[in-house]
Length: 245
Image (cartoon, rainbow, N blue to C red; front, side):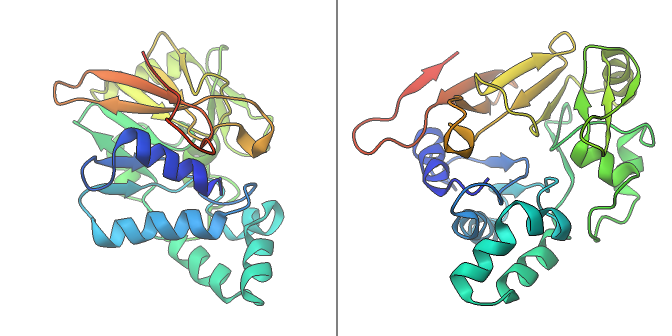
């Protein structure tokens, strides 16, 4: 979310690309002061090390949302016109929506969709477009897990809420162990849901420069074991403040 110094801190703690493989789950722009720099670095790394970094699309990688939450205005302020904004938002249409790690961790920005039962459903639809207001592509970027069973109306006005019964069925159908997603501020940087079948990862510390939250990275090792690395905002000097769990 435009927090460039915290992205640099993330690489300092997690390891530089390409020494470490990275998968980012969206929302690189808006709200923070350095959206241009943040998304430029990630895209440059993707061009330089295409096999080492994956950048998924978030609900903020969209023309409509960026005109409201800061990226459009930032481009105007820094470049004097909207050309850079237009080029980036055209590029966002090509970002993948989901990723599969080791055939068992399903990664995406938001959550599940009542229109999607299998991973093949996702492979089969046309993602190269502006994020629609409704439908499966919208749901993948906007939905949230919920304590209540079944599908629910999302208070966000897009996507759905989905209960543990939904995520259990989806994981079973697709032979998945875990759904990893972002999209919601969690104070510890990560939060388990649905009997540890769904995890929210939030990597923007002190979100919007005022929320006071930790951030985290989910580290998956060669044996498919995972560790959460928590970190705080980029310090002015000295060593990073890291907690391993």
